[in-house]
Length: 407
Image (cartoon, rainbow, N blue to C red; front, side):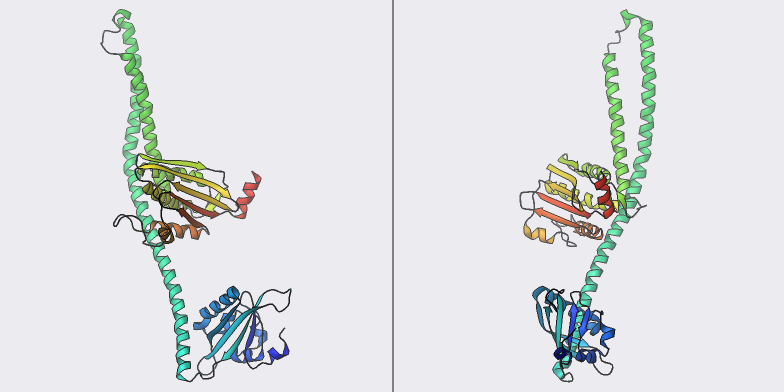
C-alpha cells in the first residue's frame, strides 16, 4: 500500500483508518514498535505507544480528523531494553485513492537525545499528562457513582417512608370505609322505618315533627357519595405513592408512560398550592422500554420544579408525543423562567436555584443521570419571565416503531 520512498524512509510512518486502526506502516515504524507489519495491521494505534501516552494518542487522532492536521505530538514507545523512546508525531488526513475512504497519516521524528535532561523531563511530562487524563476520567466516574449512590439511598429512604405512610393511612382508611358502608346500610333501614312510621301516624300528623325531613334525606343522599369519593381519592393517592417508590422495582419493561404519569400527577397535585393547575395532554405513544419507576421519578421532579417556579398561581402542563424515533415528554410552566447562565448550569450536582437550605441541588442531576442511562436526554428552554419548557427524550426501539406502524 505504501510507495517505495515512504517504505524505505528513515523516519517512522504509519497509515490509519478513520477509527485509528493500522492500515500500513514502513520499516522504520516496525523497528520502533519492535513487531512486524503483519502483526500490527488492524491494531489500534494507541496500542503501539506507552500506556501513559494512549490518551494523548487518541486526542492527536481526534484533532487530525477535526482540523485536518495535528503537529508536534510527543508520544512514548516502550522499548525491550532501556527507557521508552520519545517520538514527535505530525498527523494529517489523507485519501490513498481519490475514491477511497478517509485515512490518517502520521510521520514521526525520534528524539535521540532522550538521555538529555530535557528529553527526560519531556518523557516524565508525557507520563504525568497521561496520568492526569486517566485521573480526570476516574474522577468523573467517581462523581457519577457518588450521585448514583445518593439517588439509591434517597430512593431507599423514600421507599421506607412511603411503606410506613401507606400502612398508617390504609388502616384508618379501612375503618372509615367500613363504617361508611355500615352507615349507608343503617340509613337505608332507618328510612324504611321512618316511612312506615309516617304511614302509621297518618297524613294529618306526618309533618308534626317541625323538621323538613325530605330535605334531610336529600342532604344525606348527597353527603354519602361525596364522602365515598373523598375516600377513593385518598386511596388513589396512597396507591400512587406506593407505585412511585415500590421496593419491588421490576427493572426494564415495555411500559405505558401515560398510565404511570397519571399517578405521578396525583402526587404533584396533592403537594401543589390551590392556585396552581396541572394539566395533562397525552398523545399516542407505543409502549416504551424503560424502568417505569425511575422515569416516574424524573417526571415528578420536573413537575415539582415547575410548580415551584409558578409560585402560588399559574399552570403546568404535562404532555407526551412521538417525534420520529423518540418518545417526548414535555413539562411546560408559565413561571418566572431562567436566564442563559442558569440554564447552562442546570443538571450539575449541587447546583440549585432555590434559597439556601431549601434544596440539595441533586434533583436534576439525578434525573439527568437516569435519562442518560436510558440513552435519552433532557432539554431545557427558558427565558426570564417567559416560563420554562423541559423536554425528556427517550429512544423508541425497533419493536416500538413496529407497534406504532401496525396501528
